[in-house]
Image: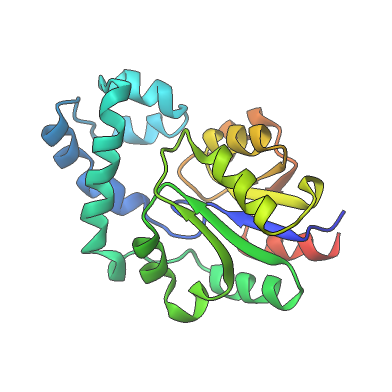
Amino acid sequence: MSYQLAIFDFDGTLADSWPFFLSVLNDIADQHGFNRVDAVQAERLRHYGPRDIMRHVGMPAWKLPFASRSFIDRMRGHTGHIPLFDGVEGALHALDRAGVRLALVSSNAEDNVRRTLGPELATLFRHYECGMSIFGKSARIRKVVRQAQTAPGRALYVGDQTTDADAARRAGIGFGAVSWGYTPIEALRSAAPEREFTAPNDWLSLASS
């Protein structure tokens, strides 16, 4: 089945922001009073879901919006140093040329997203929904599907975390897992994604399958 609408997550899916996240994580931990994490622990935590990570570092749920805001604010000064993954730009252009409508739903801020994408690539996306909690994406995904006037069965949310899979399912659409993001693909397979992508160029199958 081909898809008419591809909705993308941003961090870990389009943008390689994991190194930046690690570089500021312990500063944010000190600021908001949760446990510091060393590089070995951070790598192990990539296999956990967000709620398990929060329990591990001693972050209560009420602190998550504040910690997320701190990450977003720090990123504003470094968007020029956060690259897109290799192949993302070409794959997005090819999807657009193939007639697949592109949208973006991210917990990051829209200004960070647009600056990292750059003006040319940013214009390929017809819909932006940004700045929500990582646990609040499903309503935004439904909104995008409705605005795009696309049948849910012809829309796919592409992301790199188990919360992305959960959000897609709650919104009534399929989930496509990328193998290069924050969460290892082995952990994402437990969510039974409809599609699995080993490189951005694999997204072109959405238009032709």
